[in-house]
Length: 371
Image 1 (cartoon, rainbow, N blue to C red):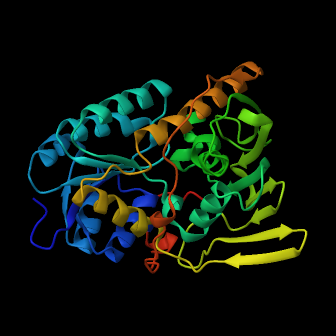
Image 2 (cartoon, rainbow, N blue to C red; image 1 turned 180 degrees about the vertical axis):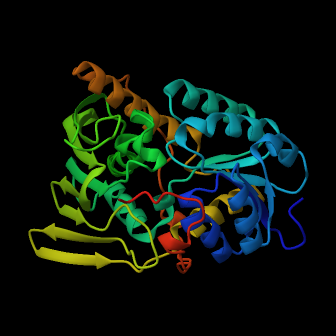
């Protein structure tokens, strides 16, 4: 099924910036995965990217034929959020494995549908939470679970950038905006650091004068977790870049920056401060997209359920949905208590060397995200 060298054959669905900049170069760093096909509606991408990578291009109209062609084993779905669901459903129903960019969908109902279908399908699905395989992040989460930082009490984070309104993220409403796009990172981080699910959500948003976004471009979110643990994060599409979080426990305070981004020169770093003083923990840059792909392919080849499955994606989605409702009403939203048995394990950390990324000028038919 996978060929003599036991490599999972992937098709990229959506040839936008994240595919061109990160996934397509990164997969070459793996030992168990190979890029075989591209699905795109852009004839220039179809010709130029297919030639550059030596792969076959398919149109969206021919997606069903690709799934049944016998030429692929898995798809990496990187379309705009609102378009995820039909491509996920078609793949799972065809028995094709799915690596799905976060957030899982653009509505809670779609996330529930994806979760239900994954549970019925023989194919595997993993949400592309690349930081679940980044060594510094994995170390912080596992140390938090081991009690190294004491009883965890609070978390604060900022993640911001200056996004071009002309990019698809700039004009597709809340589900194309900063909370699902960037807020998923601090949300997923604190859920895994605390090992708990939030039970109360409140959000406040603002629109920057002179900017043309059709959503709140700067949003502050407050979460309450069981045990009276609190978390706050602010995300923005209309500021200078910012990326950091602080985790406060009864034994130590952790300050992490960089903590959410990726790239050949981006190594996660955190400072641990205790009564004895401060210690900096630095990690070399790794190929984050290759890491997650290698892990998922191992799960496919060894018939193991990936950790960041549809349930993990759904648990973020229900909070993102609550943030949207809070922004609409101005009221806090109470969530039913939930728990999850699986969390990030230490052996999920991988160390593939970073791939070289194309510059913005080399991206094909893409309006770069950053202004």
